[in-house]
Amino acid sequence: MPMNKTPNQGRLDKIVAEARRQRELREQSYREQALKLYPWVCGRCAREFNRLNLHELTVHHRDHDHDNNPADGSNWELLCIYCHENEHARYLTGVTSHGPGPSANPGDTATYKPFADLDKLLEKK
Image (cartoon, rainbow, N blue to C red; front, top):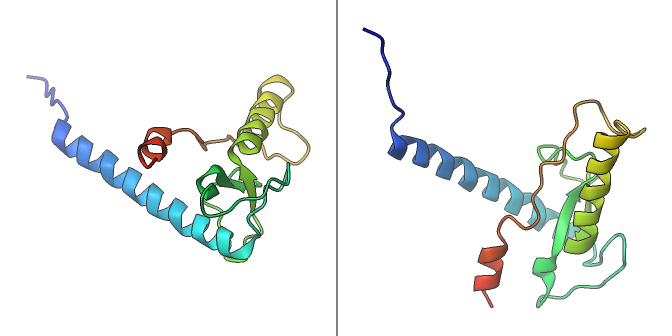
């Protein structure tokens, strides 16, 4: 008799929720560090930010590795949500149409989703 076990949905939901919580904690940690290290200005368009619109300023990982978070901030730059989205779109276009660019490592992929929690940000208003 073959063993066909269906996964326990409650257990899977807990695992996914914990993974998301850990990711959010990790992101919050490096975001807070980056905001202390760098002026609140987009590194591309030079738009300035204050406490009212700071949620539109994101931390971009220069090497596209979100687990590479040195304490000195050398892998981070602050970008507004528009420039950040553009940077990832340019990266993905380069990887898919022309292969990795000169500074990219084979196998690099962009994993950041800048609008993933947009609904939560909009609820705060």
